Image (cartoon, rainbow, N blue to C red; front, side, top):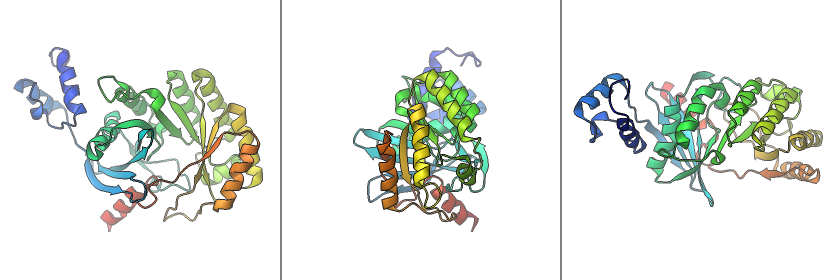
Length: 327
């Protein structure tokens, strides 16, 4: 507004309309027509299109595939819990990290999302589902710390009292472990939760399934620095993969890592991805793995699988839609 020579309060008026999902400057009735015309000449408002909307018959989880202004698409998942509604958003179109168990990385990285596009995932999920979002997880398509500038801008916007007003303690960022990104995020000293997608406690296994592995010790050292700076406990995400990372020796090594930095371990039965050959660990082995961690004093939970009937795993719906479009 300063650039156009308009008074500052006009910015709050535009902000209010955008928070309602308005995507037409000429529908902003309390703006002068001359300002409406000026804004429309310089800025684009794009309402993300609902390409697919799936609702789980098992638990009510909802998944949205959003069409973006440039023809790309991303996924958002709404999960309903007793304590409130959590939304899992994407931070990039595709992903460059190459994890062997993930559908998001098939095809590589296309581009990063803007802060506004990430904010739209939250806003339009609320509008389409009529469900108020109380918690946000950046664990969808993409690596958030590979888009750190956009993610930090998004956090500022979603935290604004005159915006979605979602507190930092209700936000989780999941990363595959980019040490430089973890250290940069620590310097912001935000009171959010950092979740490390560890998935293997040793470098040989981790590099096999996560080509972006920078070294387990390097990642853990960055996590220690993050904890010292913010005082926020870190969690380890650990997908249980049959015959790959579910041995007793690996459980013991994982326990040492977790106890070293006081991390919470979240075990995840691997989700099936059509293009991948990896399989989830048997239920009995997962239970044994969990018990072995607990016996060594590790705080561990087994994630409940939500939306298994609606391609709720990261990247699956986008991948299927893209394949159909190409066909």
